[in-house]
Amino acid sequence: AACRAAAHRTLSLTVTQVCLFLPFPTVLVTQVEVGAWTYHYGDKSDYSWELARNFCRSFYTDLVAIQNQGEIAYLNRVLPVHKPHYWIGIRKINNVWTWVGTNKALTKEAENWAKREPNNKGRNQDCVEIYIQRKQDAGRWNDENCQRKKRALCYQASCQSSSCSQRGECVETIGNYTCDCYPGFYGPECEHAVKCPALATPARGRLNCTHWHGDFTYNSTCSFSCNMGFVRNGSETLECTALGQWTGRPPLCEVMRCPKLRGLEPVLVNCSHPLGSFSYGSVCRFRCTQGYFLNGTSRVQCQPDGHWSDKMPACQGTLFCHVLASMGSSAFPLQALCRSETRG
Ligand SMILES: [Ca+2]
Image (cartoon, rainbow, N blue to C red; front, side, top):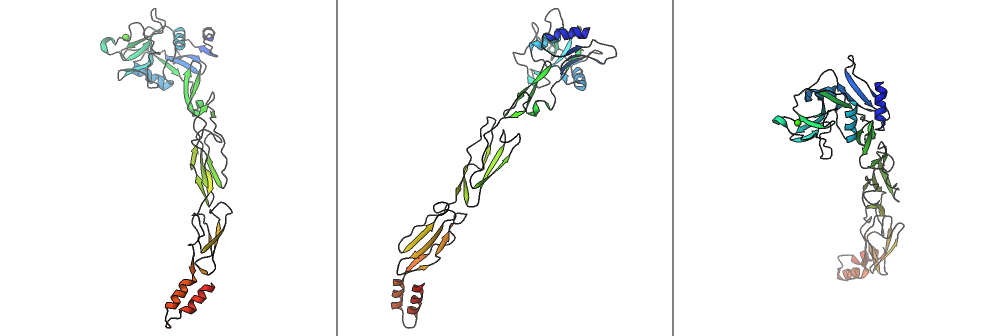
């Protein structure tokens, strides 16, 4: 009957499942269950605040962390009257009232002090109790001497380590939990990762991606590389941000260029450019105008590293040869040498 009564009472809180077990001598603790979230308290003995916390942490999650007025009203309604009242999970740490479970400071909005509290009576009231079904200030808090003995009011968290897909902060609520998803994730269980537009393999290049949460989603990292003879213009790596955008634009693979070659009389140049003007794969051939001869290679090719395969040739005039020849004496057979070069 007690169970049904409790269930009836909590329906107004829109909690799906509830059962109140009244204290039995054989039961170690008394339990008020609200769906996945449960409250418990030691009904055998009262403890100092520190021991109460140990008790809660040994058997449950911690001393209760109260999050809203609905929870306070609920506790005040379902917990039995107990004269020394109940310890809750707030303690003064470095002079700041702190939720011990989360180590977060108590905010002004969350305060629920009884009238004229906290008064720090005796200057040693560093722990907090909740008045349950008290004539005055029922459900409100009082700072108390931590050595006083009270019931440990514990809760069993509904959040599990696997809750929220480990992609969000699990926030306890009465009867359930909600997920406060980290940036880049969404969904009731933060099960979805924010998507970025899919990236394509660049022309004349390669794309290599690492996906942590699914194809082209938050935290996916893609690196670009270019085929031999092509050079990347743009970022090497892009990352998918929590906003669903890449950290930059995809790069292009541009053909590697060699220095431009210009024919200057008497050198004549004739080039072919299969991939781009004076670029990787371009071939240039050299000739000399009439009366000159080529000194060097007759053909160069643009290499993948942007260098020509050979040094530029020069065209040497036969005139130079004749001058030399006329200067020569019969001791040196220069005339014969020049003739031979001119033919080449
Ligand atoms: Ca007080």
